[in-house]
Length: 158
Image (cartoon, rainbow, N blue to C red; front, side):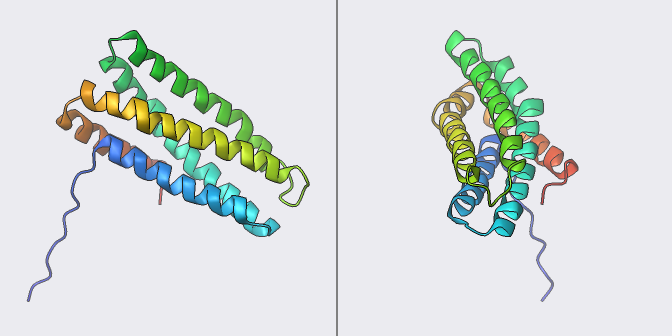
């Protein structure tokens, strides 16, 4: 019997971004539960890599497409707020990475990072993504998904 070629179903942009959110949530949960300095270091490095790839693809591809489709003030405000939340995470992440994983303040910094990221992901999933589905066609979201996937690969996503 010949081997069947498995073709991967195209992923729309929103499904891909939600999958990234799920992955980072899991890593943040593991970080919060970890007490081992070496494990914390490993997890925070992985979180940093995942967040950098995710924010890059959002800012380079998804956000500009969303902004272009967003005609109402409320929809455009979601775009600007999301960009600012990325900026705040970019300020906090080096603080976490620059703190010794066994330092007394490490857990507090990691917790603040987790809260920022979870808040941002929740807002995107509850507000921005549903609006994007209304503002963009299924084909547009599939095309954006392909672009996001290609860019993730170029950035070294695993």
